[in-house]
Length: 369
Image 1 (cartoon, helix red, strand yellow):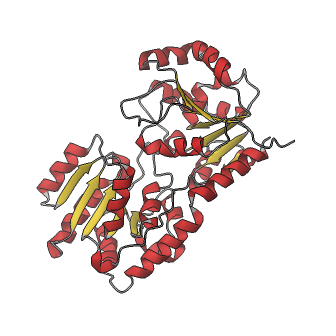
Image 2 (spheres, rainbow, N blue to C red):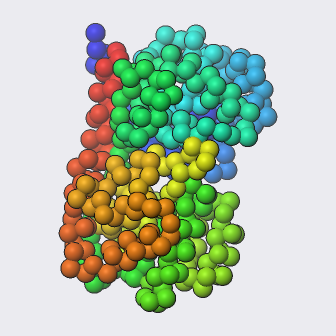
Image 3 (cartoon, rainbow, N blue to C red):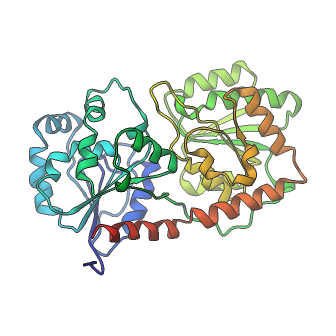
């Protein structure tokens, strides 16, 4: 029998960093008794009111010990605090590391897979390799497995997850009510937003932008984000004489403002040899709701973020010259630019509105009670 308002609790091993704000949003849009539990907090975690958030605050070394011993102490912590109808765990490896504790509870379990927790096949991290070897334990214990895209659904099936347990449910984004800026009033910028890591492919964009700027010197590349490749990418831009601004991390409001003013957002994510690949591409959604077209490589779940009528903005060949050609075709298309904006925004606003996506999530909860 369906409970009128089930109590939903969420779990993340490390309290949320800036890219995981959607979990916090889900928490606050859930039932009245919803809470979020975490074992630790990193320096990248954003600050939020603690009335619904419970953090054990144990260090990394102790976390590894708990994994080896079966999370003995967190088990007592969970038993005293976690009293819910449904526990929703984001990321498959967080579910696996908690699997011995979960066997002692009778609540329903929902696990959302986001990308590298199912795509990545290799890692130097011992615990991740152990998780990959035993991932079937998560599939067995979970009542429902949520894939954040159709691409992730395929990866789950390839890894042995029962088809009847999987449901595709997009995370969703807040839809912008602002009117898009007209083509003639846009900044002459190409925008990149993301981590400066190999999977995000920023190197391809810098090379493409340098080529474009030889004939269109007024075009500026802006890079928002940080990561292990920043120093290398800054040197590459300097060597290629690419007019590029490395801005670092910005808050969400500032990022959306940059998106709204840019001529185009480029998401040049690429698949890596270890299997890691873009699961969906949230920045592609955010850019289009802000009224800015997207150009991206045709990889992973990214095609799901682009309306079929605009699939020419997906680059089939992973090379910087092809990427540059498609970017140039968009930023010089003054006549068709408004159509690209209108179709992209309509597609995202109708399919990825966070309110609609949250209703779908509630339907998933109802299906297992």
